[in-house]
Length: 241
Image 1 (spheres, rainbow, N blue to C red):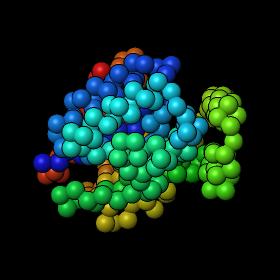
Image 2: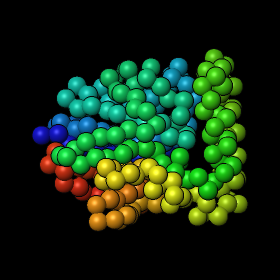
Image 3: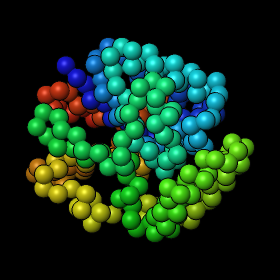
Image 4: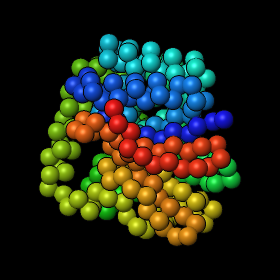
């Protein structure tokens, strides 16, 4: 029987090995459960191109290759931190790159999956920046620049984003109710996303709900993740590592 597992906002990086170990522990826990693993964005704290090579990434790739060889499948949606991650990286472990919005049926229930940043329409400055940086032409040009330049650019974006967040009302960075309503027509029972770092199950109506996955944290070392059985049973729980 298939197990469907949903995670987001791991923000993996060499600077935070505990998060990486937590991710490896999750793969080990689910490797013999015929798992479909859905990573809904911000898997990495930054991604400067699929041509990046490092011992940090090599270790992750080996773990995912083993996970896949055990009969599991990895799916990935880009987030605001790793939107440049492409199929070339995923090909190393037979991963599948999903579109920004993806629909999944489990036991007769209809799910919508996305990272979640597109729902934060009140954050006008971010949405404007996203439209520019995610332009396919610009993204294609950036991928052709030297790695050192892209690394410097990514560091600049992170610092700018951190500084801007300090001056923003936190409510602005959360989802917009109208955007959620538009994303959930009557035939969608559940919307699953991350991005906001506000894990919770929101009851929208008697038949609809929005599940916000949690970001991965080091203190305490845990993250709110979602497991759905082949029968459609939901388990939203704190994964501790």
